Image 1 (cartoon, rainbow, N blue to C red):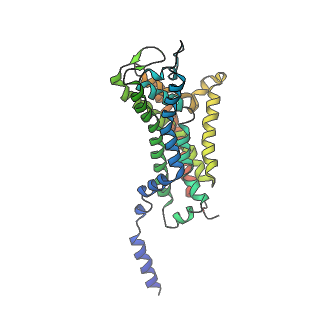
Image 2 (cartoon, rainbow, N blue to C red):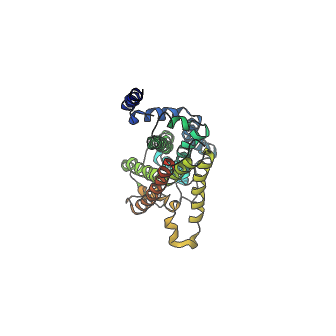
Image 3 (cartoon, helix red, strand yellow):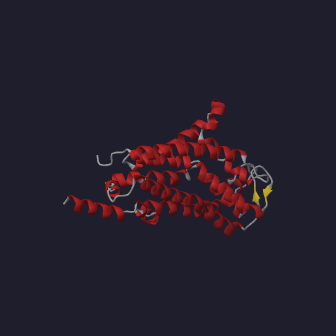
Length: 288
């Protein structure tokens, strides 16, 4: 009896492939079908059209104040895309990163499905890696969507041309696309700290709103603290301090300094938070 039981367990163990549990494509399909995914993509897709409609109704920005991308939004399609990035930085583009990473594990716990996934059995590390990969992919896609649609809408409305800069001068049209790509990549990397915090909170709470809200709250608080000039050089340790450094990629002479510092800071914070997430989840009691 003992021998037969041992043999059966051995056979089942031999057929078990941890790497075949919860394929990434399955997780991506599940997340894509969720209503919150569809809503956030719809909002980001619609925003350039809403802004265009506002310009059409209110008229072209005029006056001497040309010190912001918004004031130059109608100069060309490239300017319109840069305006979308300017409007999204600081809050709007924080939401996809916080939402897709903060709602991933906590939602499963809230639905009481987490224990069944782990009982499948899906290794905890694999579960987190797939959740993290899916969250990062959807976050990056959402962030890319805003300037991409803005570029198409702006080019259709205002034509293709040089990117006029708030500081004066212009970036030649031939250099616009690679520079915008650099700016978008920096924004994705710069928001990783927000996503990592959301992901960490998602592993320690059963309330998705708490994980998402906590990450958004961090972005707001660091932005407020960065505005306090009395903090001096201490502000350089705040992720929000570097969030607009993507504009350095759109200068005639490409400036890397601010983007490198912002990216390194974000990655360091993100790695620490992700390590805490994996370490804590490995020991977490998911039954109680």
